[in-house]
Length: 188
Image (cartoon, rainbow, N blue to C red; front, side):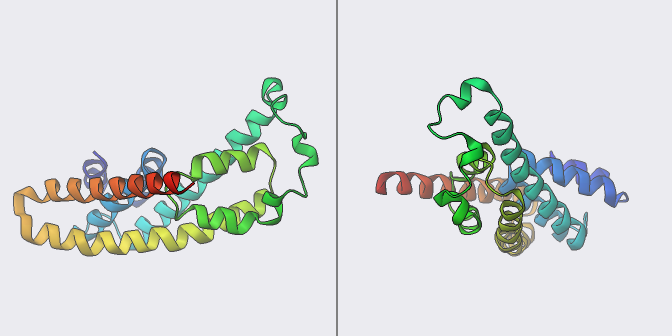
């Protein structure tokens, strides 16, 4: 569906950027792969694609932080905590916030609980945003370049079946993330 919207709006880069940003809120990795393939098809430019992916992912991450901060205002949530969020400034998380958030970008299954916890405990928003931005620049660029390369091969060799190959590539990326997350749970 994302590819269809990008094709329809090929002459409207701003609309394409907004579509990609919204797509990252649904599934970041799939949006990255599909957007890279659309770049290969000359539907969207590389600068517009990368800018939209970066903005969408970082805004989504800050949105998770905001949900955690909002939850901290809920009276029932506050009673679960031994120490109020206002007194949590010197915790381990606050001291190591940049690296914890940065590394979580590369470990599947950690972002939702960690990012909402950062908001809940009022960890530094500026440090949080800097960490997620740096990690997003690295992770998303790497996935985008890989997708651009693999997508080019799929488009060149699969003809009418190319979208089946693309769907398979997306499924492999999602499944690999889930397998890594499960193996991490077993280790713990």
